Image (cartoon, rainbow, N blue to C red):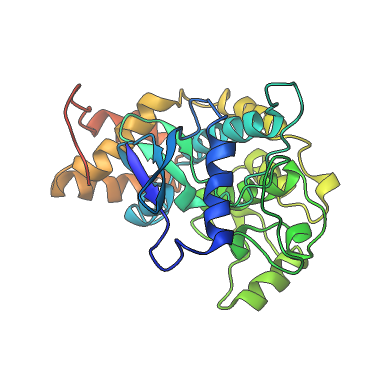
Length: 306
């Protein structure tokens, strides 16, 4: 398991202990293969803790940096589809009495997506999630989450719903497809201004291998007005799945092979990866024809960690 505790200098501040309790209350009710499970919540002496499912692997931000944000389009779409599946479940979650829990993650970004060595894609850290049962309330004027992936309505302190997560999911998909962030600037104020202006160009402007359908999916998720985005994460997933159906097969085994090659290939394999990544700029189908055939398979039962 992974044990999550508050930093010592925050452990006695009520707002932070309440946030941890909120996370335990919300996350313990989410049971889904694409969401990291909370197994226990308790107190050891004066220390509150969460015991969470351990996912052997790394977060998506680390994987992205490791490969220079060079993801084949089909792999990017598959990862995006799996995250949408987790969000759709959380957004639609009801309590034991059938009442909507109104869960909004509010911090969907690469560090909060775990990629398992077995090819799983899992959403983590509902620590700042908005939910009907949440004990803490956001102080007016306070912004929770990573500025880069916040929807315009979050930045303006307006009422938000699941479409705020869809906007954040759009920024993540954009980064996977293009290798760059749609709104990130060199300071927070400029980043906010770019988001509020809808200042993003299609992913294909950065990478020729992104076709129009993926461009359209990504840009719809990034719409300035919430009403112009996908109504649900399930709708966005369906759009990604339709596109994936036109490509060579892409799923957990292919992601597993990709991750295995990145972390456990030797130097010669790394050179191959660099060459294949370059070739994918011109041939998006090359991942199934070249990359995966040269990747060593995971050894069943082998224990590997970073």
